[in-house]
Image (cartoon, rainbow, N blue to C red):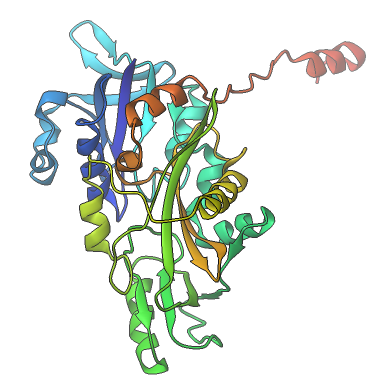
Length: 345
């Protein structure tokens, strides 16, 4: 399998996507082609043997071949015309905007390219923390209560302490814990730097948090181990950023079998069928023995490879179980029938 890894994008999480893409080089056995989307949304073919974070921070990537996306995939200019960048399928590793909001999924779908990642509808739902709440509740999965704030509505009726989050952003960017009303305004100012809508939730002291990744293959649902992430008051940006470069598996959380089954049941309810074709990670809370969804990571950092004993095998099996696109027939029968009945249309 020749896998095209698409990463970068015009996003606050651009650099994290680069780290994730580089980390995958260490854990994949298949042939990999790196396709970088820069902040101007130009695509570049990055030499696999030379990929390094500095190549992007210094702008050296601009000397690499520029790519064009169209029917049949990516192509680059050659001496004798356009040369195809032959890949069997693509892996969406763009975090945040462009990758998780549905833009890349829409492009791949439009041009009929096979890819691993959330489809358009799944991307739109999981990109918004508000729509994710609606999804969870519709699937019978608990979620914390919330309020939506905007620059015009900056007050809340919720009791303190609170957690303030930009509505459409990951990696704990712009997130603050607010313990009193006097600190709310500053936390909102921080969050509004990244989004024009903010979600406010209760901050549960000492809550138990668990991460679970998985996907649906021809063998059925394949789950990772459950991880209890190490965190302070919250799992902040620095901790997540360092985690995204992980390539070694982590230890299982200390949970009873029944608790693991609870998490897997909630995961499956959220995953199937909306996220078919994607490997996602769900972050859950366990409160008084009940499972609550915190958030869905449709393109998790480093694809959550560190949660799997056989990540390479899981990805290969997922590649064989991608949803088949519907191919509607365009025959113009309706227009022809009108033309035949009434003359020119």
